[in-house]
Image (cartoon, rainbow, N blue to C red):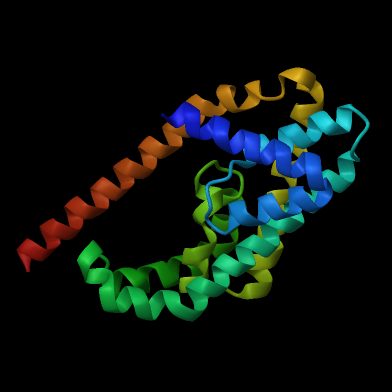
Length: 206
């Protein structure tokens, strides 16, 4: 089932970039950063393959990919900034998020937001969803933009370069990353589970 979904997404990515070139790279990377699970681990290596074929320019692909990430991240940030906190304050209790939790998140982003956004851009899964909480916590937008672009650029450079090196086998990069992505997913699930457990335990103690 998951393999079928990935293959479906890969076909969309290939057709989009094949038809619209750099504009397709920009659009797809923008959508990925908005929270839509379109894997950049397919977008950039396929673009790298086209670079190897002489159809695209390496530097342009990497910069356009990172810029697409930035614009998509700013859209997700704006959604979090404008509507995130009031919505979570109103309905957060139903998913075990309290005002105290939001205050903690605010303090976290105030203190470590730069590093969180930068390193979050270098992690599968996390990179797709880091912008919304940054917006909810109202992280300084100039810093957010800077660290988003600086974090996205090496990711785009790396996966474009890997696509060039792998050539016709560019699609194997996604498979090789699969175990690492599973590890990240498991760590996220464990962190959420620990949070829920502590939240319920604290409620009972009060």
